[in-house]
Length: 163
Image (cartoon, rainbow, N blue to C red; front, side, top):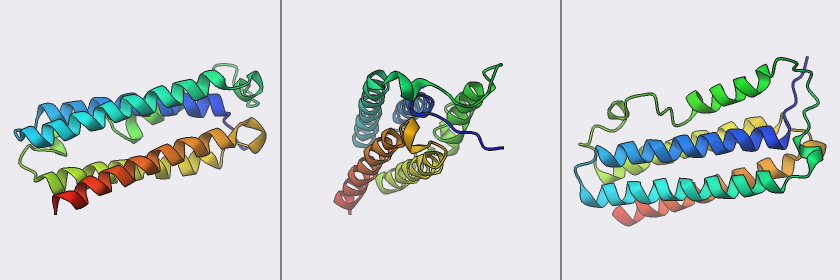
């Protein structure tokens, strides 16, 4: 049995992931002893806030047809699954950020971690895109992927500037 997610459900996940991403970067910034790195991490949190606004606007602009789930789910388990997956798969804010960022990392190391997290996010969306049929708004998921690719490009530029 195949489960299809619509664009509204995917955008809801994207919103949750961006909220989690902003929280991750803010926690990492709070643990950094380097003012420059702290400022850059705070910038990343603000960028995640911007992505959230983009995805919220995309979600609000969806036609009703893209909000209808064609999956039989009388107990709304799919929605709960999507939220749990977004909360734990990428930018898990329940994890202690000191496990990933001890505060002793160089700026290069911090940006490498951030790039890795963003790449994971892209891989996540690429996988989910295959679950969204064209008629249910696959193009909206592609918009999310383009946004995240832009984030990786920006992070890569910051990393290159440090060398």
